[in-house]
Amino acid sequence: MTLLRNNRRSLTCFIAAALFTAFVATSMVKAEPTPLPSFGGSGGLIAGQQEASIGEQVMTSIRRSAPQVQDPLVYDYLYSVIYRLVPSAPLDNRNLKLVLIDSPALNAFAVPGGVVGVNGGLFLSATTEQQFASVLAHELAHLSQRHFARRMEQQETSAPLTLAGMIAGIVLSAVTQSDIGIAAIAGTQAMAIQNMLSYSRAHEQEADRVGLDILANAGLDPRGMPEMFEIMMRQNRLQGNKMPEYLSTHPLTQSRVSDTQNRAEQYPSKTVHDSQEYHLMRSRLQVHYAKTPASAVEIFESYLNRDDTKKNDAIRYGLAVAYKENKQLAKAESILQELLSKNPGRITFQVTLAEIYTEQKRYEDARQILKTALSRNPGNYPITWALAGLEIADGNGSAAARYLKDLTRQRPSGDQIWLRLAEAEGMARNIVGVHRARAEYDALRGDYRSAQRQLRQAQEKLPAGSAERQVVSERLSDIASRIQQANRS
Image (cartoon, rainbow, N blue to C red; front, side, top):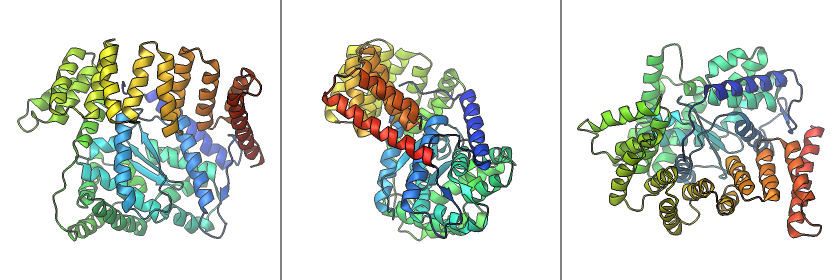
């Protein structure tokens, strides 16, 4: 799959949308047909149902407005790391929703409802998997200790804050410069949002302590956390007045770095090796965030001229990806064939080579690689997504739709899967399928009216009494209930 290029216009549009949402929240005007409970003055911590509502609305806002890295290989890696940490985290809710924001800035966030997000830039800043995982462990610790809810309780004496305004602040903080974004939102409500998004030093220290335990119990190196903090401090010094986004909501001091270093040293000393997959994904994102594909080629070629990196498979893989993005497909294929000869079962190499074959219109070669890989890894997300893309490129909409339907059952909240399924169904001339897939895409983005229209069109084209019409009617009833709930709020 070709990685999406960073798009300044889409980010600008998102900022404008987020600022508008915040302005509407400040004015207490309903702008979106979604239920938005109010917080403040309730006399206690927010309840589980309210946390779930926050998580749902944050995800809806992100899907609708925030640029995301649409790369199944990177997402699948992030999923694997998170769920390596989760068994060691004292979480009540382990059904997490993961977000990968398309921004080269260093940032991560976690909010009630089990939403955990990172910027693609975290891969660029963390030089080891231990450092990368330490940020995720820290965010899981914030969730497990319910710091967000506790922060809200402390804010009860302030002006009440609506969920709409809070969500605007969360998402804006997640994907753009927090200080710029907050400064652009006029009024005391902006300060309330900023105060609530900023964790206290006590909460940060508690998240450090719990996060270190999570890392150690997951078999990772707790020393990765103070190492990552040192990287953040170094970036802060280099950037001068332009504070890294992460530090605007996670205050970091030298004493905290020293405290975390001392705590990390109390764990048994052991050597923990990074997985190769982390460095492969890091190379993919280094190519993604390069100024141009040609500059990515130049950077990775220079790495291979150095004695310390010339035999590094992750660097060679990065060069292959750079060649692929720069349309030097024969060179990319040559490197991947060599990498696969040493690691014949590595999914990342198989998928990337199949993508190259697909671009070369060598569909049978791509199909053979991917089908063999899928038989050994049933249900694998990147392989199945690549197969669907191959079939779309080869004009086989029905085959693509079958693969994508499998993915919707695995990942029903994947809005881009539903959107691509609509494309495949259109290619297969399955108009009912187009309407149904598009309805799910619209619903995930909070546009319930549009979802309702799509389902009604599907319903009209189905014979009375058919099983599929019954399914569509039940889904229509669910969407109608959501619209009514929004109208009552």
